[in-house]
Structures are given as structure tokens and as C-alpha cells.
Image 1 (tube, rainbow, N blue to C red):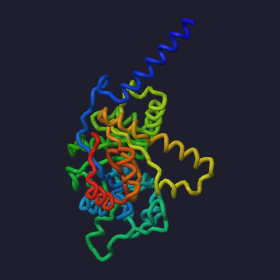
Image 2 (image 1 turned 180 degrees about the horizontal axis):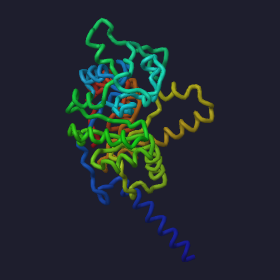
Image 3 (image 1 turned 60 degrees about the vertical axis):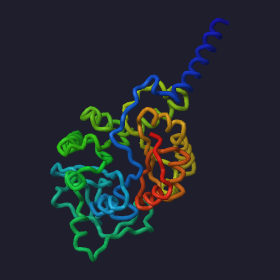
Image 4 (image 1 turned 90 degrees about the vertical axis):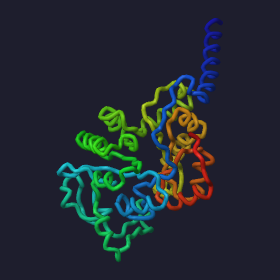
Length: 324
């Protein structure tokens, strides 16, 4: 009987304290002060509006309301940090080869026309009549991006588990004095741990493992008591891109992915993270209905999109305000 009473008392205290601290995390955690907050994040520079991960896309996005650029980094054979999503060159250049096997000066130019990465029926083209586009369609070095956009926040996805790549990216961020306006991270938890060890002053977004831990912690009531290392929570939201990506999956996998996505997206959990000073950015949303869902239903801080001009128009017309 005494054990039953003790267990009941503990469970009651746990549930009540979890409920309170979920809504008042500042009582047990010091609130972080993000150096910047953004709403409109151009995924690969705006892959639906221009040639992805190119200076052409970055220029266009920043002229049309983009507040942060999202890009991906790889390492060439001669140890140059370049901006490119895939490990291989065939999809973006039409030539066969791995980036790691080719020196930077021998890399081919990005094609003038590319199929959209999630829908091959949509072709993204550059203006072939503009001579300036030729230079803007070379695969850019990360340092070129930093030099061209010195005050623009940038979100860097490290694609390779390569210690020298991680060190060079960190060195470049410091060299260009961008620690306060740069996020970096990876889907891989191994890479994320190395990023934090390399430079803890750069805000890191969560790995898949960390995102899963946060979600699990929320559903079992532990989240208010967990110390969080990532400074930004970036997670997918089911949308058009998600549906087209999984359309050929086995139905069982589709159910697993759908349930996982739904578990990740919870307004109360997002609000808790934001009260702790951790912005919540969701991806990849590409139409007004999805923007509406992210901002007004989920209360997301910002959205990563392939169509930043469309998102800018939505934000202007709705005058969305941050929760943070």
C-alpha cells in the first residue's frame, strides 16, 4: 500500500510539473537569445525558381524577400569547399563523376536547365540570353558565397562526414566573421557532434536523432527537463514535396513516414522550444496552403521553401508575426 501511494504521488508530481514547465520553461532554463530570426528561407537558394545552389538562385532569392539562404557543402579532390547538394554531378551538370574525385577547376558548369529535384516533369531554366548567367552558373565555392553575401544569414548542411571539410567550413565562417549569422548542421548525428566539438559558437540545427529525442521527450513528458544542445529545430512537415517523394514507397513505409512526420509537428512542442529561445523552422513547403498551415496552425518561426518569392508574397499579405 505504501509503495502504491508513493508511486501515485510521484506520478502526480511528475505530470503536474511537466505540464507547468512545458509552458513555463524559463523557470528552470535560461532562455537563449537568437542572434537573428527569419521567416523566409530559400531551400537551395529557391530550387523551384532558379538553378539550385547557384549564385544565380541566391541573387534572385535575395531580390525577392529571402531572409536566409539554405545550401549544402561538399569537398573536392583538391580540398575546396563547394556548394552543391548531391555527391555526384550527373543530375546538375549532365556529366558523370563524384565531386570528391575531381579538382575544383575541373568541375563542369551547372546546366542551364534542370529538372526540379522532386518532380522531373518541372524544368527549371536560366536566361540563356543573359551573358552574366554563365559565371553565375559555375558551382560556387563557399568562400565566394560568403564574400558575395556578407550580411545574409546562411544555413549550411554538411553533407560529408569529413573532418577536414568540417574544419574548413568552421575556419571560413570565422574568417568572414559570420559566427553570429550562420547555422550549420546535418541529418547525421555523428557529423553534428563533430560540428559542436569543432566550433560550439556556431548555432547548430538538430540531427535526426536529436529531433527524434525531442519528440519522444515531448510525448512522454520529459522535454521540459531535458538540456538541449541544438540552437535551432529544423524538421519536415508533410506537404507536396513529401507526398511526391514517397509516392513510390511501399504502403507500410508510407504509413511509418506519415506517422513520424505527424509526431514531429506539434504546436505545443514548437511553442515550448520557442519559449526556450530555440527557433523552429519547417521544410519543405511550397504553396500558400502549406505556408498557412506552418505559421497559423503549427506556429512555426519560419519556413524553408523552393518558392521564396511566393512565400514573400504570402508574408506581406498576411503580415505574420513571430512567436519569439
